[in-house]
Length: 67
Image (tube, rainbow, N blue to C red):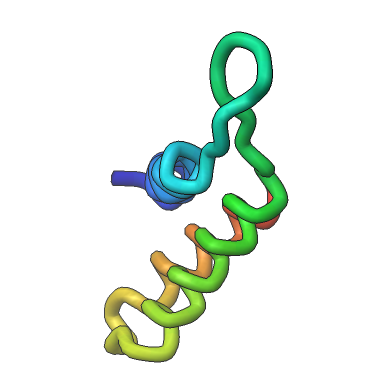
């Protein structure tokens, strides 16, 4: 999976996880919170990963920041 695909996947998962019900039809997601959560998760992975995967997770973080 490319860093861009992984960034989008993490972001989408957090959007789904933190959605709240709206007064009309559908759901509302605060995309700022979803982005912050995804960045926190990636920062944790960066802190725990070995050097072989470090560049990958840094690219994922960059892609999330650009969403």
